[in-house]
Image (cartoon, rainbow, N blue to C red):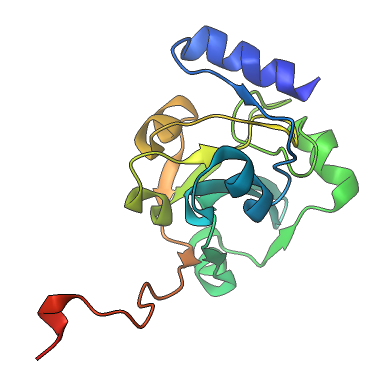
Length: 167
């Protein structure tokens, strides 16, 4: 079971981090944010991609969108999301619970710089009802991830201006 592989990963490498299990589904960014009481941007979503003959994982902030041109430039090929039937077979985690921890077999993990905007992020933990709260730096360290810039984030301007921006 995928949740168990994630628990084993943390028991071995970071016993101070608790795997949180919720009765609410956290299968999407919006559901995960609701289940764990954080804004959607803090959800660290894991994208399972095939680039040429390689499978990679990219972990990004919940509000970030993968930029295909950036991914292609960095990895030398057009990225394609893994098919639903491939995800669990390759990662060991079901769709909605994919994370860079406790993988079925080692895969290259990349953390997008969009995560650096947060002190704590909330990635899934192997199932659609589990997650962990972790610093982006620690997540990258534990998964031997490389930092990359392959996503776009929406503008943070909400139409409300700070006092310094008014005349």
